[in-house]
Image (cartoon, rainbow, N blue to C red; front, side, top):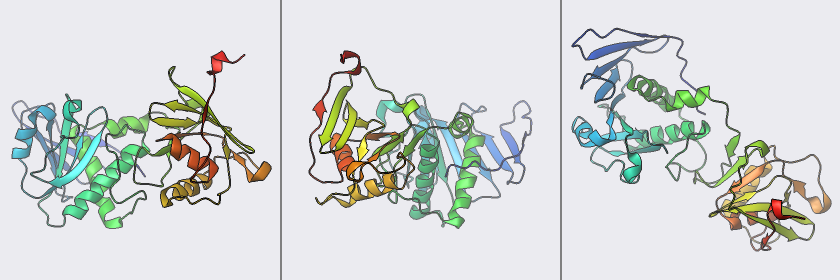
Length: 316
């Protein structure tokens, strides 16, 4: 997930004075053409290729009304290059960026369109989902809350060609977030793919944990089970070394069962089992809420409560 198109070399045809068109040649990929409507990459621009049914139109968010005026009726997918990236899809008349409000700021908008009838609602939604997958896999902060089609990627070989084309067109249009993230050090933060919620539970390696000064340190004790964590706003960070119990007798929701099964299948535990079949986490779990953290660790719907502990610096 998140693989970069195999672009070996890029050759750009120089733009003579007064000409607003540029041709970009990708080795092993279709020739891509960009029309600079306003004469620069900072303005309205259109990108297309004879080798793809997709095209991209891009402009500053402040020029959105003008950008949409250039768009034909039909379905769209789009990316808003805000600090927290937002991806969506819908018909051409939909409100774009209404969920971001002022956060869109000085960002640019990239609209994917096609005159081919095969680019329908399903295809546009698939492109949105895969762009979310790529951004999330690269560790790019997302404003999206959920993933279309649920927690698990459903890959279509046919539609993956469009995903590859979309990444090429984005790059030519000036979108650099994916390429910059690919060149950056790999993120040690992994999503637990158990629900469609992109912000549900994440695995954080010990050297990547960050604990704010106002976080509340807490401890969970139940029989032989011991766990430590921090309340950080509404989220809860379970610390490495905490116990992970076998599935209990109390009823768990399907979502919590999937969370536990996904975590159990990951390489997150010290070798061997402890007392009562307990296992010890080698990484932290960043959970959306404290109740989710409790159910993951105890394997039961009704579990013990976390007790406030002195901050690490206050312990005698």
